[in-house]
Amino acid sequence: MKAEPVPDPLPASADSQKIAALRRTKFVATSALVLCVAVFAAAKLMQASYPWLGYVAAFAEAATIGGLADWYAVVALFKRPLGLPIPHTAIIPENRERIADNLGRFIETNFLSEGPVREKLNEVDFASLVADWLSDPQRSQGLSRFVARLVPKTLAAVDQSGLRGFVTQRVVEQVNRIEVAPLAADFLAAFTEDRKHQKIFDELTRAIERFLKDETALETLRDKIRAELPSVFNLFRADAYLLKRIVNSAGTLLEQARKDKNHPLRHEFDAFFSRFINKLRNSKDYARRAERMKQDLLARPQFRELADDMWGSFKHFIEQDSQAENSLTRKHLSGMFVEIGRHLAEDPAIRADMNRGFVVALASFVESQKSGVSAFIADQVKRWDLTQLTRVIEINIGRDLQYIRFNGMAIGGLAGLALYIFERTFLTN
Image (cartoon, rainbow, N blue to C red; front, side, top):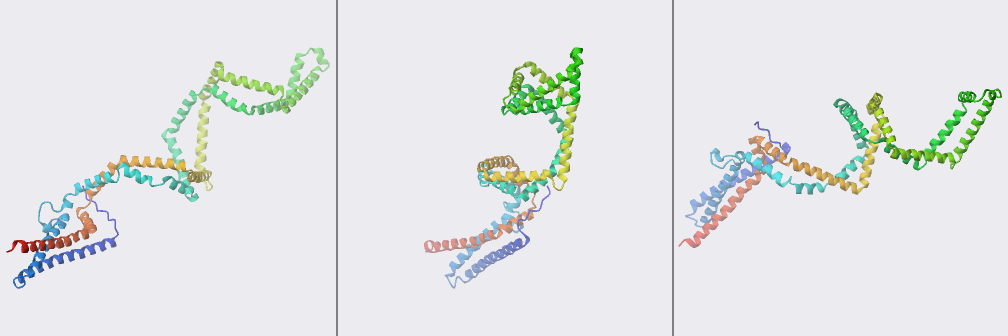
């Protein structure tokens, strides 16, 4: 496995400062150790002349031992002291894989467990962030441009993937399952509730009046009347008289019906609609007829062609509009996003629901991926360059470790002095 460089979280200037501080601390700690050795040697040489220097020698001796022991311990973390192959030294380099695995498990257990993750996610108001972002017109415009660019590509992908044919087939299958007659009955019943069907009656009366005023239609009616009357009546132009009477009577009747909202013809029209709706709902014969009409319509190639034409027109419009400078698609999308943001900001209940959804989704994602994160961290640490890894750790915590040497000399010296005093007080005659 090829070693990777260790990522440095600090800039070069910060590293330089830490290295300089580490070197100063090492120099001072080593100087203190050398001073302890020198003081010990001097005190021992002059102890015969000055007995009280025995206390100084005991302190310096124990401090030297403590300093050496802690120097060994600190060095053993990163490398082998004096290059000697002493067991259990160079602890970090020698145990890199175990440290990497433990580090990954530690992060997985303590930072990515479900409880802490949900607790942290609950502190974030995701819905408010979304609302604030969408409410900004500039951001919504940017989002609308992004979506508008994606739509033509999405439509092209739908064409190439065969998804359109699949959707069309599913739609046809769903239409086949629909019972047309009851559906039409419900539609007409809703249509007649507020008497909208009476507008049809008005248009029918106007159409009949226009027919009765059409010269060609009147001539046709006159020919029919002439053919039915005996020849003697035709000599007296009875056909013209009858036609005039019929047209005038019909026109008067239709005009009265159109002006009178309670005219008997209107009631008859209501009754006709009511009977027709009832038959659509209950008549098996009407149901069969409606089903045949539906099947005939779906079987016609024109139906498929119409669907293809509608899809092609829609796709062409989207492609052209998305590239236009004043795109209607982008305009409506931008307004819709801004409106969504405003409504979301004003509705705490929806925001609360959204936040719960975000927490559940993100927590579930972290829960499903945390073992992968643990393995990823361990693999990354294992791939780091050993020399650089040791350098990074030493730079960041080495200065604190050097203070252990100071503490070792101080505590060791005090312990040695205490033992020397105990020896002089209780064990010497």
